[in-house]
Each structure stands twice: as structure tokens, then as C-alpha cells.
Length: 351
Image (cartoon, rainbow, N blue to C red; front, side, top):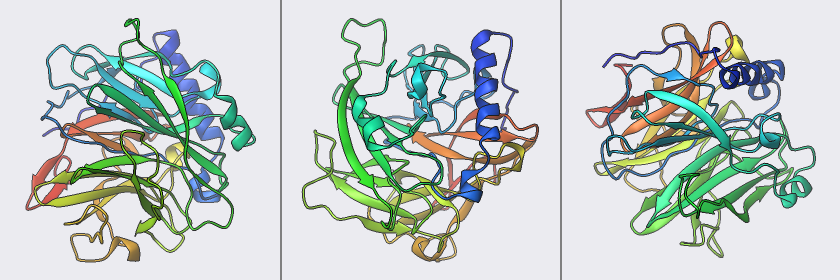
């Protein structure tokens, strides 16, 4: 398949706001290089095979996109993304597409004001990061993280809704509070949540830098961590950049995708997407060469391509992967394409 991208459009106020958001992230520097603890990634299940949209247009300024892709023609698609302080106090942003993922419009933030417990739990928190959106029996679960650049005091929160349509009278994001947290001295950072259903159970993977990626079993339908569950280490690079897990099952394998190296530095970003697989949802995961992901393994899926110098913050829904890519001029764009499978391994555009 061909990968097609167009630059972020700035013809409207909303598109201009996205450009400014990109500039703000670049101006903040690269926490993944200078300070561990920043990232964005997620993944969820597969109910059908949605068709990849090809060329994308509209407001593509979605960092760490959490994709919800419909398989029904004409049904809205949604992308939830990392917030930006001037929009809704940094709450998770929402973009919609009414043409099967081809054209995107910024619509709103999840809340106008952050829940009070977040600002109390994470002093100095601005943007909320790296959302994950999943649906279960008509209910929608939105996981997200609250942190500050380079710091280990972080929390993963949860909000729920019965619809994604803001015109529905029942539309309301209900704050469900804390799911998991981290503090200085923990082997992980509690950011970048992703959820997988396997064998009637739900698992949440999370984390970045420090010792890497961890996984916990969830209690369902509460969406919170199961009582007595202990974190399982599933991927790490001995202190090097690894973050933004996403999980999906294909055939008899479970696949763990992560984002490596440096995020959030504009044209100096070095993000790239890697993968390993396991016959168990909790690992051990190994890459194509048989190297364990806990020992630094990871097969390249996508990094630099075309005019883009780095790619990461991926999510997976209905056979599609969404991600953000940093352009050589420093801005970032949303990308969406179908995952192809060759000899049991995921491929994007032949990489």
C-alpha cells in the first residue's frame, strides 16, 4: 500500500491552534532525551477490518492518538489525543471524521476543567497524555495519564461514557478516578495506558523509560486494577528510551508494540515503533530475531519515512494503526494505515 500524508492545514483557527500546539511541544524540548518519562501510546481490540483512509486532511495535530475506527461506512471516527494547555485546561482533545477517517476536525476536550484530584495528585500537571479509548457492550472507557516532563510522580485515570456522540443527550464523561500510580523509586512510570482483552480477562500495559513497560490485570467492568494484581515486566531497554505500549492479538500471537528513543523534539525527534510477540498476553515477548523484549529486543515497524523524521505514539483499532509523525520542519501529523501481516509479523508499507 502507499503511505500518503499531507501537511497540517492552517486555513482555519482550529488548524492554527494545532500548529501552535506542535510548536509548544517542540519548545518544551525532548523529555524523552533530556528527562525520562514522556510518551504516548495505546492499543485496543478488533471487531472488524476497517478500511484505511489513504490520504489524510483537516486538523491532523493529534499527538499520541487513540483511534476509534468504525467499520460501518458513514459512521463517525474519533481520535482522542494528548491535550494542550490553552484548550480545555490541557484535557484530552477530541477530533472526529465523518468521511471514514480521511478528513479530521477538532471538536472539543473531554472536560473543560481537570478533575480536582488530578491537580492534587500531580502537582504542576498541565496536559493530560496518551489516551486509550475502548468500547465494551455499549460503554466507552477512556484511559489517560497525568504527569509532568521527566518526573516519576504520575497517575493513570479513567473516564467513562455511554456514547461518543456529543449531540446525544446522554453524552457525559464521568470521572472514575485513579487506576494506577507511580512515585519516585518505582521501577516504572505510570503513563501511556493500553488495554487488551484476552481469554475473558483485561490487561493494562503502561510505562516508559526507567525499567520499561509493565502489565497489570484489570477488574471488569470497573476498569480498575484487580485486587492483589502485581505488575509484570514485559519490555525494557536498560534505561534507554522505550514507552507507549500498544497490544493486539493476531492469529495465535499477542503483539506488543512500543515507541523507542526520543519523542517531542520536533525535527530532532528520533521516535520509532518496534514490536515483539508472545503466545501469552503477558509474555514473554520476543522480537523477530528471538531477542526478549525485556532484554532490549524489538523489531522495527516504522520510523522515519518520506518527509517525516520520526514516528510513534501508536494505537490500534479494527486492523488499523494510528500514530503521530514529526515532519522535518518540526510539526507533527496524524497518520492512519492498515497493518499488513507477513509471515506472522506486522508490516506498514513494506518496512
